[in-house]
Amino acid sequence: MRRPLPLLALALLAGCAGGERQDLLVGSHTQAPGEGLYRYRFDPVHGRLDTHPEQRLGSANSAWLTLSVDGRRLFVSHENGPGQPDPSGAVSSFALDPVHHWLTPLSRVASGGDEPTHLGLSADERFLFVAHYAVQAHPGGDLTVLPVDRQGRLGPPRQRLRHAPSGVDPRRQASSHVHAAVPSPDGRYLFASDLGADRLFAYRYQPDAALPLAPAEPPATALPPGSGPRHLLFDASGTHAYLTLELADEVALLDRQAARLTLRQRLPLGEAGPPPASAADPQRAGALHLSADGRFLYVLSRGPRNRMAVFAVAPGDGRLRLLQRHDLEGREAREFALDPSGRWLLVADQQSDELLVIRRDPQSGRLGDTRQRLPVTQPMALRFLDVP
Image (cartoon, rainbow, N blue to C red):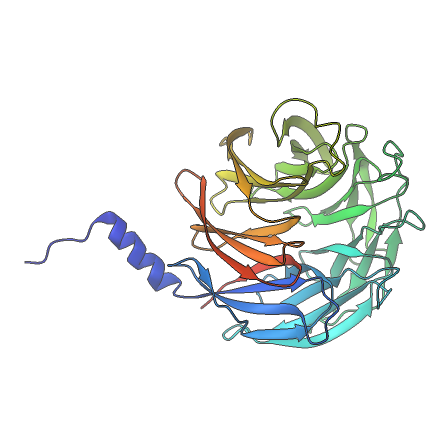
């Protein structure tokens, strides 16, 4: 008589059966010809990326990757701007084979601004919302709306929106710097976080109007002066949102009711106390992501130290409780992603030219040792693909 397998062994076998391989898209900041967008094979059992990509495409400065709901279209922002070989911000679309994940270029258009850093796709997939950070204070950043046809091809800008800066930080807030454009889960609104304005701007989505976005009521949520909002993330219910405040090196919890966001909690990402006076490069809050089960929030902080803050998310009200501060290797961690198995967290270290694969405990949410460090030129964007 065969003895039953332990629960852990069964779980591992189930994980292997459901995902013997995973594909990871990597966008990078590079001017080398023939590079910029890569597709890597990832082994979720052993936590390792193949050393060579399965596919590479000429897609310079690929700063953000957004997928259509069915996973058959990929939209890529090209963070071009003044002083670069290509000074014009641009966005591209690609067809994505659902089985083999082979990428085929579909279209490329000028985005209408400098350094497009984030993309949001409307729920009906008729429009792409482009957040232009724009490093230079003049003309500054803005929000642009691009039409998308049924084949996934992009059209020229339909609408362009600008915001007034707060000016609290004379270096970082002399003009608008839109850092994210995030549709609400119900598809009725778009929220734009503007680091230069210290505001979250809310727009009603009206796809059949001449201008797809109109100011909502209220039109904006004011944030603490000089805090510098960066990335916004909604939970599965759409009633709570999490926001990184880059200049304050904090994460915030907001309650949402229609277009109204109410700030309810602010937590520092580092230890208590002011930063060292000699720190020329202060800690700055960056990317954030929820675990697939919504139980944990991961928030990146970069500067003198790369580190990840891990928070437990309270059921119901979404409040955060710090579980762990985990130091990361490398410099200028730009983005990260949780793999579909939940056992690994991957980090794009832009200035260290490498990807990190870090062990994660799905039950406790805590991070462990670094399993792999893979050389990749200036990685900026990560996106896992579902494997059938």
